[in-house]
Image 1: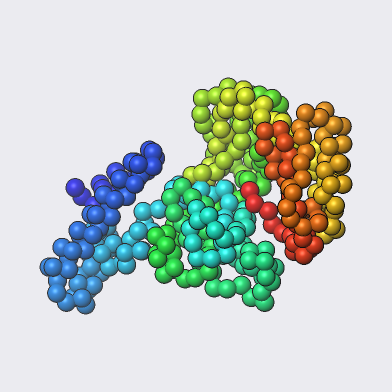
Image 2 (image 1 turned 90 degrees about the horizontal axis):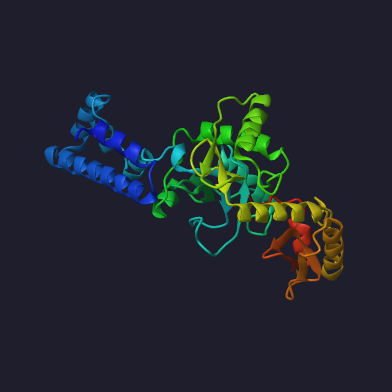
Length: 340
């Protein structure tokens, strides 16, 4: 099979499920590897081999891949359509995003994720310690995952099995960031407006919001087969998708939004005051009752510091769980960047 045909087939395969994507990637990597082996056997002298490939550039894609490092060749397997562009994860250590240990902060998608994470390091929002300068950081990518920014170099990405940012990442991430900011201004990005939002109305409203902001080339799609419009998500490429969900899920989303709106006064932005958790719980119950949500219980985490955690709360099965924090944590968390 010709090299260009193999890559075209790969591009078609990646739109399918993850198994098909992985199989396609393995086929292309195997082809690249066999091309490298054949070229090495045929040419004993490295300099002669490089000169020959330079003459053939533009004729054979395989020839271009041969003179690249393995990691560089792998980076050609990804483009922005393969990535989750909804956010960027700033991690405290050189690791993958699915590692269960360590801390992280999430920022909105941007053309330069390293520049977005560096101020959080300096402010101490990544590892809890302010820094005069951020450490050397590198952005790494992997299929269907948000980009991660970790301490290290491009070699660190390779050691973790991650890849460099695709060449089209900057433009795609910047476009997604602009579109997401517009959609977020329409109330809560993840909040339905009724107990079952009409999908076509949600789609039309989203497209009109983007058009009003002079963003006319950013697609919005409906995904799924439920009767109600759910949340936006950005799990692949520069496109916003609206999930179609069941009536029960839609009602759950809607109630969560009502709880969030009701409890907003409990978490004033930028405040560094230490709120007593039990007093905060009593205030939360009053706010919920005033909003017609008296069926939602409020409980305070038994362990922790003497202050209400300003980072928010956990809502699970109609119960709000308020967390505790130390006075130092309250001061450090004040004004920090929250996750998606």
